[in-house]
Image 1: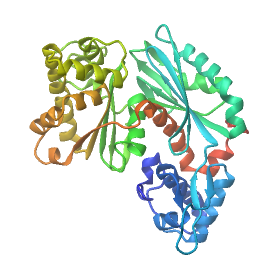
Image 2 (image 1 turned 45 degrees about the vertical axis):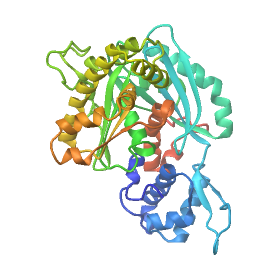
Image 3 (image 1 turned 60 degrees about the vertical axis):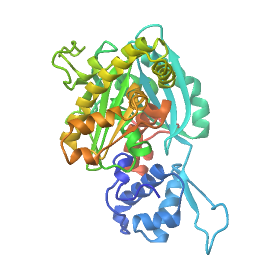
Length: 416
């Protein structure tokens, strides 16, 4: 078993204590059981009994309720068993979230089930940076084309938005997405009105952090920092004391705007020397002589050039490692994380530069915190933001499974 009941809050807001056998906390217990199954996948009733501290009959009742809600399925264990076999409980594929990630040249849409089950991904390429209304139109058209199939197999329980910008989580307002040219865009409201579904939104790097924490390279870490580098710059997400840090309005984690070079170039935010203005994917792509920005293509091109002794590229990578090391040093000294996870082109930098980045952080950070931290490349690949965006919805579902399902009309449409 990988996630305990006490750690199940990592699945997005589930209870942090063991279960109780009192009926007046049934919501708490139902949340605990579903959170464990969501984070760990298939678990036997016996495992759930041990993990929650509940008795076997209570776990059996809770499992049956989750099956009745369409959130879990039960099956008999496969293979030989000693003694009485314990039924296996696993997430249902029938309750899904629509994930949406608008970017500079595309709108990505996914269908994600409980347990981080990526069932479908659609990429709608755009010839220019899409407006918020264009994103709504694209999402509406794609979902309309899939809706009959999805609802015949179960229900859509919500939409999760991963936006490359500053997002107010209380209402999903995109306060500022400079790379998209958006200011004050009510994207969540627009999509919710168009689809008739509950919508939850957050900054794309926070969304990625959530995915890494629950299912990826930061799994089981109570203290994690996540940095993602893409076409839109560098963002981040932070986990401390086993909780995702969102800040007062959901704006926490703007690591890309950390000062790393006081003599550097001007950032889109107006400041001088921000991390994302000094360490860019664009510079790496140009130096590697490639157009495709995907991590696999970029990494292959970088390795080829480095093996050929490209001194210009070597100098660029050395500079980016040096400046990224300054940012990570600050994170290590300030937050004392157990793991730092790097995604996008930052993960490529970590791997192609061998031990250069960990060595740089070890040389800069103070004694103590620097011994505690591991630096890892992100998992989940192209599924990352879809899984993380879905967590925004599943977090609400996991808090009160029965209550959330009751608030949905047939087909998943939100009541009221």
